[in-house]
Image 1 (cartoon, rainbow, N blue to C red):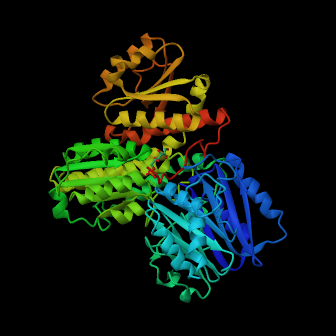
Image 2 (image 1 turned 120 degrees about the horizontal axis):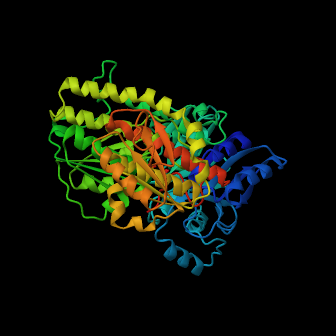
Image 3 (image 1 turned 180 degrees about the vertical axis):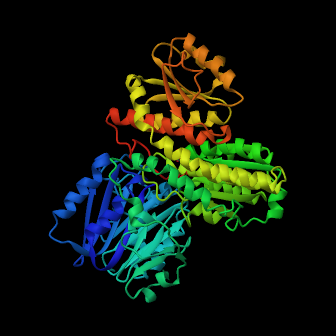
Length: 612
Ligand code: F6R
C-alpha cells in the first residue's frame, strides 16, 4: 500500500526514475509526489487529482529546465491518515525544508510524537502520521550526527509496520532506507542505486536486486562506508525472475484485460514448475519434511479477498484428494479467533503480493503456536515467503491491475498440486492416481486457453444486463467460492451491489430480494449437485429475476430456464472453478468499461494492503 521509489547516482535520468514510480501506481493512486536534489537544490512537486496525479507530475517534470539530478524520491499514495489532499501528499519535509521523507505504512504512536514535536516548536503542514519522521530527523541531525545513525534513532521510536526512504539536501550523494515488515527492495546498475517497494519499478533500469533487512538503515550512494548504516555491497542479492517486458501493456487497453488473457500461461507455469515431465511431484521448494507432512491432521488456509476465495476452493481440493479436514478463514478474522493449533496443523497462507499484513501476522501467530506453515505467493522474496517454513510460488509474472485475475488461477493451481501431494503422502492417492491427477491438472491449461477465447460470445449475451444494479451470484460446493469471487469482482470494478450465496441458502432469506430488476448469475456444474442446482434455478425463475447461467458445453438442462447461458468447456468437476471464474471476471470488467470506470485502478483500492 503506497509505492515508494528512491534513486541516487551521478546524472540520474529523472524521467526514467519517474517511470519507475509510475509502475508502482497500483499500490495507491489518490495522490503522488517527488523530491529531487539537483545542483544542491531540493525541489518538491506534488499532485492530488486522484488517478490523474501521475500525468500531472509527468507534465511538471518535462516542463523543468533540468533533466538530471543526484537524488530523487517518489511516492504514490493510498491514504491512511488524512484525505488525499496536496498537503497530505508525500514527500513530507521538516521545518527547514532540507529533509524529504516518503513513507509506507502506519506509525501507531504518531499522535504522541506529533504532540511532543508541536510542543518543541515544530510546524506541521499535513495531517499525516508520516510527517513526524521528517521533524524527528531534523532534531536528530541537528547535533551533527551521521545520517544513518540519526534515521536509526528515529526509527527506533516509531511503532508499527512501515518502510521509509529519506533524501537530505545536505548529503546529495546519499539515500537512506529502512523498513519493518513493509516491503522495500534495493537495486543497482553500474552507476546508480535504487530503493523501491516492489521490483517492477526498476526492472528496466537495475541489473541486480537486494533484500533490505528489517530494522537496519541501508545507505545507498557514493562513499557511504563512513556514514554508518549498511551499504549495498553487504546485502543479500535477490533473484527476480520477471523481466521489464512482463509489466508492459502488450497492445491491450488495460492490465486487467491483458492479465486475464495471460491466465492460461500463469496457470501452466505455476503447475508445471511443481512436477517433472513424468508427472511426479517436484518438492524441492517444499522445505517441510515429508515425514512431518504425513503427520498433518488439520489444514488451515488463510488469505484475504481473492486469495481467500482461492483458499476456499483449496478446501474442497484438499478434503477430496487428501481426506484431511480443512478450515479456511479470512486472515484478519483468523488471527483474533484464538485458534486451536498444534504441531500437526499445516497452515497455508495465500497472498498474491506476499505483503498483506493480515496474512503475514496471522501466519506468524500460527507459527508461534507450533504449526508448520506454507506460503503461496507470487512475489519471490516477499515478506510472506520469508516468514513461512516453506513456499510454493505461483509463477504468474507481475500482476499490475488492482483486481486479481491470473494469480487467482495460479493460486488454485498451486493448491491443487499441494492437495495431490498431501493425498499421495497420506496414502489416499496411489502413486499412479496422483500422477494422473497432476497430468489432468496440467491439461486444464488447454481448456483455459479455449475458455479465454470465448470472451466475445459471453459479451454478446450480457448486453441487456449492463444497466442493472443488483446482482446475485450463486453456486454450490466448490462453485460457491467462484460465486463469491464473481461478486467481489463485480463490486470492486463496477461498484454494483453484488452478493454471493450458496444456492441452497437463497430460500433461507435472500430470495426475498428477487424481483424483475435483479440478475442472478448461477454456476451450474456438471456434478453430483446438478439436479439440486436446477431446482434452485427454478426457484429464481419463479420470482421473475433475470437468470444468467454459466454452464458447460453440451448441458442443455438450463436452456428453458435461463435468459442467457455463458458456456465453458467440460472438465472434471474438481477443476471446474478454474474455467467458471473466467466469464465472471470478463463480465465484471465489461460492466466497468461500459460505465466508464478505470479497470486497473478501481476507486478506494490498492493492490497491496499493508495496514490492518
Ligand atoms: C481482489 C483483490 C484483493 C486481494 C486481497 C489480497 O481482486 O485483488 O481482494 O486479493 O487484497 O491480496 P494479496 O493476495 O496480495 O494478499
